[in-house]
Length: 309
Image (cartoon, rainbow, N blue to C red):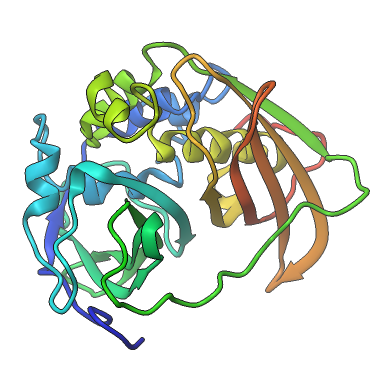
């Protein structure tokens, strides 16, 4: 890590969750009644959907609605301009699952440990802030989840910073039909449900911010589309078993509007990494653009699709 802001560590923050939070998240990302282990707290295999930790940097410990803009304004990265959180969208996200979260944080203390990987100047288009975030058991120092993400600050570039490294590409295999195709129909209320997990960005609830940013109105959380895809892929390829996924990542390529239907094409590659098969995917708005590109997961495929736990 080098360049302005690189290596800056944010103050450690406690995060917590209840079983109710886990159930709400599973409902909001499209888990269905044949996946009761994500939706029913008394199921013998009740589990946290693996990507749940992605919401904890927004939620932290609160059970109440927060002022999103104020929360994003709290800490300034030294050596870089102050970016406007009212004009920010997700760039890409990678999550690595190291240890399953318990279904409630009660009885333990978990911390969010975050640091800046780099801040990159993309010229007139804007600036990118790339961070690494870990969910850690404070008492033992054990890392449960590691997340790397980039935030794109629209139109906030040209400050003389580094352009940043090229990102690795994971395109779909050429000339090969998808091994699976899954879809998720969003509704006008999908973003209003997903935000209750803790991501209260007004961009996803009311039209004014989206109009100012050129989106024409409210758009879906990038991370809700990301989580819809994660759910569909785990169900189709991993039998809905949270133990069958190690990594999940993709790039946010274009906005999704509430009510759009998302179609995810999934390819097995046969490429193994430490016993996990590399899965490629992309998600399109039906009849429209690719909205999630560069999709890649490390999984243990289950033959015959979803299994009953």
